Length: 70
Image 1 (cartoon, one colour):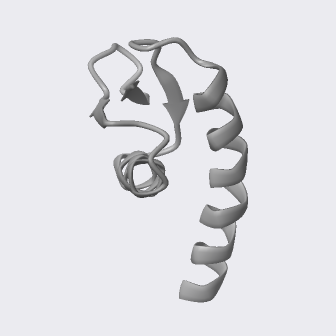
Image 2: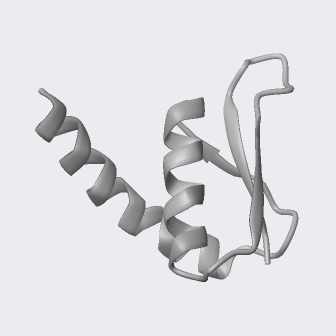
């Protein structure tokens, strides 16, 4: 099961990478969970695409968002 989760995360991350590269600084990107937000953000940081990030769910629907810092 862990391999499936890692594979799904890698496939999903490729889509988020494209979204992050097109997003303006401070524009939140909706993600599935806190774990997904952190994993994507750390991967983007390690690739040098972002300098930092914020993960939060401060909305009525408790949806998670990644806000990249360039």
